[in-house]
Image (cartoon, rainbow, N blue to C red; front, side, top):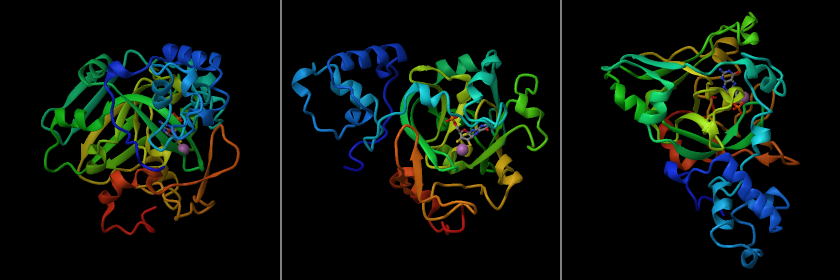
Length: 319
Ligand SMILES: Nc1nc2c(c(=O)[nH]1)N[C@H]1C(S)=C(S)[C@@H](COP(=O)(O)O)O[C@H]1N2
Ligand SMILES: [Mo]
C-alpha cells in the first residue's frame, strides 16, 4: 500500500501527549499486541482486532505511523541520536551537552522584504498559530533516517502575517549564536551562526513547518528548542534548529553547508536517490531502529506534493 494516507494536519485536541501516548502503549503491551514496531504499522494484519477495544488500538496505531505505514521512531531514539554541530559533532553526545541550553525566553524576528516586520515571543507563536501534529520522515544527507511525530505550525501561516513584498523571493533562517552555551560554536571550522534558506514557494508549501515539539512534548533542546524548521522532502541539514531570525530576501541566501562545501551540499538539496553525494550513494538509507537498509524515495516520499515546485529544473544537477 502506498499513499492511501496523507500527512494531513490534525486538530491540536487530537494530539496525544507523550504521557498518554506511553500509557496507551503500556495498555497495548498488556493486551499482548506490541511485540515489535512492525505490529504498529497500519498495514499489519489485524489478527488482534477481537482482543482490543476499538477506541484504543486503531487510534494508537494511526497516531504512530506515517502515511506510508512506517512506525514513528521512539522518543528515546529521536532524542539521543542528533546532528547539532553547535554542541558537538558526536551524534550520541548532543543530548547531554544540550541540557544546559536555555530555550526561554526566546524571540523570533521576522523581517526584511515584508510590509509588517515583527518580533514574536515564543509564547506568541504557540498561542497565535494552531499547533498540529505532523508525522514526517527525516532523511539525513548521511543516509540515515527516522520517522518523527512533530508538533508545529505551517511557516506559511507566519509568513502571511508579515506580508512578504513582491520583491521577496527567498527566506533566510538563522540559528541562535551563544558560544557560552553551545561549545561547538567555539570551533572555527564553521561560519557560525548556522544559516539556511528556502525559495519563497518552498517556504510557503503546506508541508513546511516550524516545529515546536515532538511526541506532544515541548521541543527537546537537542532537537532544536524551542523552535526549528522542518522541510521533510529535503536532506535534514535544511531543517535548521533553534531559529531566531527569519529574513525575507531577494537573492538566494548563503547557507552554512553550501559555504563550507559547495560541491557536496547544494542550496536545494532535495532528497534524490539517483544523485549520489560525491562521497557516497544516496540510493538507500538506514532507518534508525531497523536492521538492513531501505530504498530512499524520491523527495523522501513527498514527490506527489512537491515535485511540481521543480518543473523545468534538471534534478540530476540540482543536488
Ligand atoms: N542549527 C543547526 N541545525 C541543524 C543542524 C545543526 O548542526 N545545527 N543539523 C542538521 C542536520 S544535519 C540534521 S540531519 C537535522 C537533525 O535533526 P534531529 O537531531 O532533530 O533529528 O538537524 C539539522 N539542523
Ligand atoms: Mo543531516
